[in-house]
Every structure is written in structure tokens, then in C-alpha cells.
Amino acid sequence: MASEKDLQAIYFTSNAGVVIIFSYLVLFLKERGISETEIGYLAVSFSFAMLLSNTLFGRLSDSKGRRPFLLSGLLAASLSSLLYIFPTTLGGFFLARMLNGISLGIFPASIVGVASDRSLKLGKLTAYGSIGWATGGLIGGFLAEVMGLDWLFVASAVLYMIAFLIVMTSGTGESFVPAETVVHENPREMYMKALRKNWVIYLLFVMRHGTANSIWIFWALFLSEDLQLTTSQIGIVQATNMITQFVFMRTVTDKMNPRLMVILGGFTSALAFWTFTIAGDFTQIVLSQVILGFSWAMFYVGGLRTVEMRSRDEGIVATGTGLFNASLSVSQLVGPFLAIYLYSVSSTYILSMNVAALVTTVATILFVIGTV
Image 1: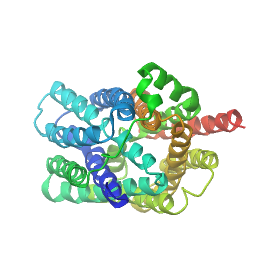
Image 2 (image 1 turned 45 degrees about the vertical axis):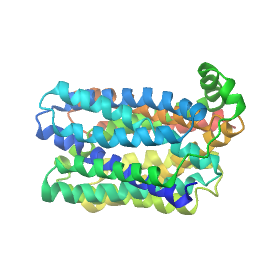
Image 3 (image 1 turned 30 degrees about the vertical axis):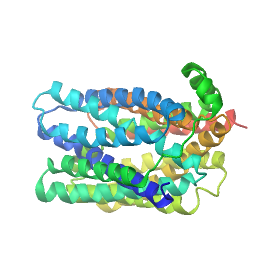
Image 4 (image 1 turned 120 degrees about the horizontal axis):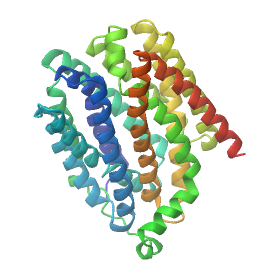
């Protein structure tokens, strides 16, 4: 049986692999002649693929076991990361984004499922995901500056392969035995049970994260064009957010009331989005990332713990967390369309930040009222 440290290492390396591409892909696409509008539509294809993949493989992890989807997902993620290097047309990048999105939706629910099977603390586990993001962002920033953007995809593939090898050699997920109730339930019953228990959390995440993703679509362009940051400075900005997440996830998120965490995370998310609009230089945007890191630590772990606790007794943890991840994918579908529209009417990245702050505030107030 894999140790807790093995699972943390898998979460760390797989998240580092994600962020190396996430942080700088938009710069790579611009370099290849892809327009802002086309970048938005490519993000939609990626998010749609992740939505389907998270929804399907979360349920399969509950009924078929964790290990097959850890292995196949991490291997597919490694291979699909390399596909970005080769396209020369929009259609080629569309295919690469779709295949990468499918790959990245196969394994996340299985990781949370393994943690739940062993009654591990989710705040502590997700902290290693955040420090993985910080590490990946820093590595990517300096690698892009020294060797070029193409090398980011090689680095991402290597990190996923390391995670794959850890799973392979540690036996992670081997001890899983599906609950008898899960084995005999059809897929629709499993999904409906998870939706009935967790729909409020899913909806709130779509509203908060959907508007936030209208910021993230063009985030690297905002930092490089409006604030004139280098790729290494962008890496430091990203790392500040993630290191802050790590500190709070590692120290307090397993001790606090999950509902309070979601509420606190919602209001401080709105504050963080607003601070982006008044940041004028590198130092100020770094400070804003401290607020953002705290807000996401509260919001994400609070939501994840709520879903895991409500799903555990029914034996549908991976189904519930798969839909939780799918709600983030829905948000990533909403975000690009909103980003394209807001940019088209304002020709600035600032409007999406103000909209995100407003919608997140309203959504959090509704959550407070609806969960009294």
C-alpha cells in the first residue's frame, strides 16, 4: 500500500505539470499567431473535454477502482502535453487542447478517492497540490526565459511521467474495494445522489470560478502587456499565490468549519479580484496574490471537504468529487465566453476583474442565505 507521502508526491508533481502549461500557454499561442478570440475558443474546447472526463472517470473510479485511472490518466497527460509543440494551425491546437483536457480529467477524482479511502486530511493533501503549482510556475517562468516556450511542454510531460512512475512503483490505489451499494447502482443513480447532496456547492463554484476564469484566460497577457512583467516575474506572481495557498491549506483548513471556509473564501476572492484592477506594478500584483491564495485555500478546501463528507457514507466519494471537478470545468467553459465578450466591449482586461468581484460577492451572499 502506498504511503501518505507517495500520494502527496503524486499530487505535487501532477499539479506542477498542470501549471507549467497553464501559466504560459497563452503566450505560446500568441507567439504562434493565435488571436485573443481564438485563444478563448481553444480554452472552451479544453474545458468541455475536462467536464466530460471528470464526470465519467470520477464515477468509474468508485465502481471499478482507483489505480487504473491513476495510471492511464497520468500517462495520457504526459503524452498529450507534448502534442502542443507540433500544431501550426488552429485546428491542430484545437485537437491538442481536447486530448489534453480528456487526459487531465481521468485521474484527479481517483487521487481524492484514495485519500478518502484512507481517511487522510484533504487540506494537507491539497496543500501539496498548491506547492506543486508554485514550483511549476517558477520552473516554467525561468525555463521559458532561458530556453524558450516550447520546453515548457517537455517539462510538463516529464513531471506527469514522474507521477505515473510513483503510482506504478508504490501500488497507490491497489487496496480499493468498491462498496456493495455502489457496485449495484446504475450510473444515473450515482450521479443523482451526488447532485442532490452537493448541488449548492457545485452552483456556487460555477458562479465564482466561472467569472474568475474570464480573468485567467488572458491573465498572462495582462501581466506581460499591461504590467510589463517578464516570464520569470510572472512565475513569481503565480508562485506567491500558490505558496500562500500551501501555508493556509497545510496549517488551518483541516481544522475550520467547512461552511465558514467557503463563505470567507468567497468574500476574500471578490476582494482579490478587485485588487487586480488597482495594481500598477510587480510589487502590488504580488501582494494581491497573497489575498488570492488565502481566498482559494478557504474556498476550495471548504468546498472539497463538504463534498467528501457528504459523499463518504454513500460510497460515492469519487463520483461526488468528480462532479466537483466537473463544476470547475463548467466554470472554465463559462469563463472564455465571458472573457471574449467583455474584452470585445471594452478592449481591456480590467472589466472581467470587476465583473468577477461583483458576481462572487452576490453568489457568496446567496450561499450564506441558502445554507442558514
